[in-house]
Structures are given as structure tokens and as C-alpha cells.
Image (cartoon, rainbow, N blue to C red; front, side):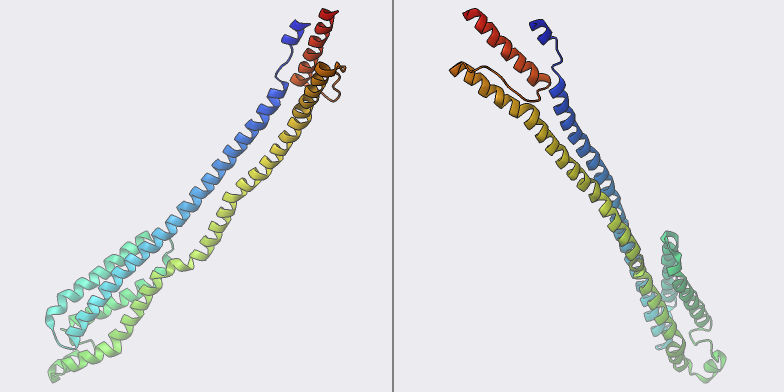
Length: 274
């Protein structure tokens, strides 16, 4: 009989407890990995938005600086007749076009740069034509030179032709600077969805873990704690008052084997005394 008890299945309760806790561990691991991946995507998207916005601002600032330098050079050239600003005017224009080329190469959405490229081309043509006529302007250049009114026509040219185009160029640059803002709304919505996807596995895992813990509590109470309390009370009553050891209930696995062993020991004790 003792050999039968020793060779019996002693792993039923252990299996249930082990499976329950391993389920919790696996669930935590799985939900943690899913949340980690979603948070990584969210972090990457946020970083890309901030990086693109920062890069747009840097390029726009570079173009504004180049346009401003050219504007100052053309004021000195057309209004004050300072011919030493020719090289600065050309260098600023090349700097503006070079930065625009870089922006076109890096931009994911090139539609924002169409108006800027058009305004830059117009400014280049206007500036080249003005410089080609020796700083006098395209309108009635020969007559202006003959009449000695180059500075006066230069000021009029700057006010009537160049200033308006310069304003359109700077407006296009500022529009490009804020172009990433228009794409923030759909990307923010996508990031919001990613955030929900990152949190959802955790919430589901918490709900499932609560259910598993409650099931384990119920299982431990019904099949382990309560029967052990009954056996402890029954064994105490037998030792103290010789009340027959009788534990009722649905006993299984190790708890049932423990009850049977206690009954065997009580029987052996009775036989020894008799």
C-alpha cells in the first residue's frame, strides 16, 4: 500500500500551479514584447517628425539668409550704385539655389517646393537680366545710361519689380518652413493609433492575468487550502478527543494522497495499540 502511494501521481497540483504561473509569465512576456515594439515604432515616428521639422527649419533659415544677403546686395547695387556687390549678389543667389537643391533632394513631399522653386527661378532671371545691363535694369536701359539716370531707374526697378518678387520668395520659403506642420495631423492620428495599439496588449494582459489569478485563488482555496484546514482540524480532533478522522469533500491529487496517508497512519496506530 505504501509502495502504491509512493509510486502514485504526485504532480497533479504542481502541474496546475505551474501551468497557471507560467501562463502569467508568458502573457507578461508577450504583452511586454508587443508593447515594446509598438512603443519603438511610436518613438521612431516621433523622432522622424522632429528630425524632418528641424531639417526643414535649418534649410529654410539657410535660404532666408541667402535671400536676405542678395536683397541687401541688390539694394546697395541698384539704389546706391555700389558695383562691388555684384559678386556678393551672385554668390548669394548660388547659395540659395544650392540649398533649394538640397531641400528638393531630401523632401518626401516635393509639392511644397514647387512655388519656392518657381520663385527662385524668377528671381534668378530677374537678377541676371539686371546684372547683364550693368546695374541699370531691363527697362529702357540704354536710354537710362544715355540720360545718366541709372540710379533713379535702379531704385524704381527695385521697388516695382524686385521687391514684389523678393516678397513672394520669402513667403514661399516660410511656407516651406512650416510645410511639415500640414503633415503633422495625419501623422499625429497615426501615432495616436500606435499608442492605443501599444497600450491595448497591456490592458488585455492585465484583464487576463486578473482572471487567471482569481482562478488560481479559487483552485487553491477549493482544492488545497480548505481540504488541508479540514484535515488539520480532523487530525487534531482525533489526537485530542479520538474523534474518528473523516474529511469530506472533493479531494484530488496530492491532497487526496495526503488524506489517505493520514488515515493509514491512524489505522496503524490503532492496530499497534490493540
